[in-house]
Image (tube, rainbow, N blue to C red; front, side):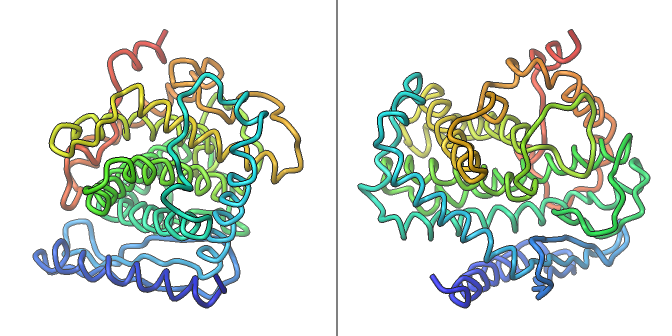
Length: 352
């Protein structure tokens, strides 16, 4: 696909979503949502509110053309990599503890996989920005985190200081909140598009999780992931984002299993999503010129098996508990499934 076609596809997909949101969410409360495009040659997206916290929302989502171009090319590269590697012996050995992957190429060509994964990734990025706006993350970052920045950027802006302390903790938690919101919305879209073919839905879910991992790595500047005792910077690392997102997918898919008839039990979901995420991580490692992983940090282990992240995760839970009341109070058009949640078992783990 040529660059111009990527831009046209992106605009067509997001213009339709923006129109629907203005009609269903914003117009009833006298608000407005605008989609803007930036020609600045950087991989970035942002969300901003021009309205007061109690006023009708005047919201804007801005995507850079360079973001959609790089995102498509990265997903295209992943699909080529997956097509070449998924039948090799070393690949089978690496995934020998997981159930077989869904038959991706029985349903889609490599080009179709690139297209479908890109649309899923693009939709996720858009809903992630929308989550920032509807849950009033800019206001929360100012009031609790003391962050003076009114526009929320997804990649570091040149010249900005590295966030630390409370500012970083609130930023990380609101990023995870936006991830949670976007994941739910993307799963609803997935169910709507693939409701009539259960095996195709399984393939589509696999592709969505692959694309989420690609997104998180792109927004981390594709640097190596390492554990941290406390939040640093504006965003969690890709491994943490995936580990916190996947249980949200399991819970929602479990919840809709009976009405949708998708036939995937918890084991199926865990194995499918772990394989998808780890496939993307292997691609990231290969892009960095490594023949094999240096450690297992980038791969899915389950939150209760990430001892080196325990102190960091404790900060996340404590900060969520601090902002939850305000976030729920000011959220626009919220649903219980949109919010972060941490189980009693997980809370006991991070405090042990």
